Image 1 (cartoon, rainbow, N blue to C red):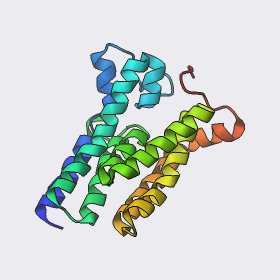
Image 2: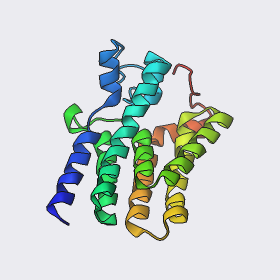
Image 3: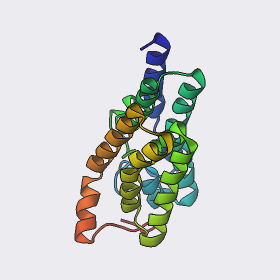
Image 4: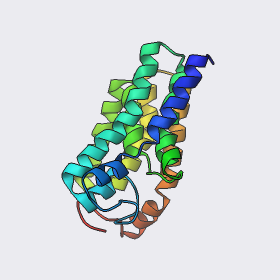
Length: 199
């Protein structure tokens, strides 16, 4: 691991630690997403507390946090291991942001950004899966769970047996499932809220 790669990974974590949801809500004079709705500083909760425009900006910001570090890593020609760790660091930054008391969101949009950073086709396949499930069931958490569980297979199909990227994607998926454990319980009991409806 080179100094450049280490610096890149650290910077990816710091970029991931910038909470799009909190900043957007502050700038748009909206309620703090950590204290309203589900309490999660992510795009879905911003949709609840602030509407579509705020949610779209939050989603875009969270995706950029995963996309930009991975793209920079690609441009610098780092190893696949460094690329995998860079994407993972951005993802962890969103979950455990150093700037916000290590209390962040669930990581769906940031992981999607990382997938686009790994390969545009992987990101597109993951995004289309989310959209398809959301269109049919209108449940954000279910869409996220289905899309991310398929993401490692998309990496394998599109990028071949690239172990660092497959492992990083699989670990992000496992963490994302853990972060969604209450949503999974609600899904099983039929109590999970639908997209665009207050919770």
